[in-house]
Length: 171
Image (cartoon, rainbow, N blue to C red):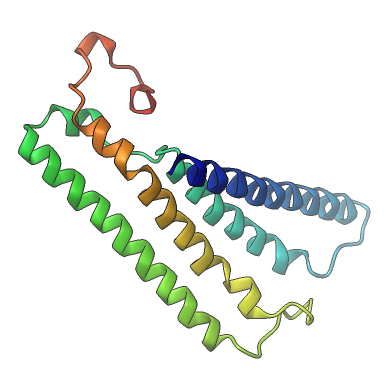
């Protein structure tokens, strides 16, 4: 499981990092060209797409590190039975949501079949929309790969009140 987790993490870092660099370069070049009185015809269509891709893949990477906002200290302060129930409920809701998002994204690929970007007609809409099922399933994989460690951490005693810090959920 550790090897799969590392592989997924490396893949997500490369994909999200590359997308972020591409977005930064596109925005920088487009801003420079607009300042010079010209522009890039595809900027207004491609920049939001890159931003959504960065967001989806970045969210999956953060999920792999269990870095999304949560209430870990509140959950760990609950009685054991309630703590387990809250954990199972929250994990189930997250997994159901991302499976539904992946399924909806997959269905969208059929609907967008035959469509292309207006400014880049050689880029198909299904390719653009493929981020939804791919990143959603990456998020599900990240959740499932880190589930055993999260369950184990759930049973750890809550830290003493004087030990709580803003980043204690990451420890």
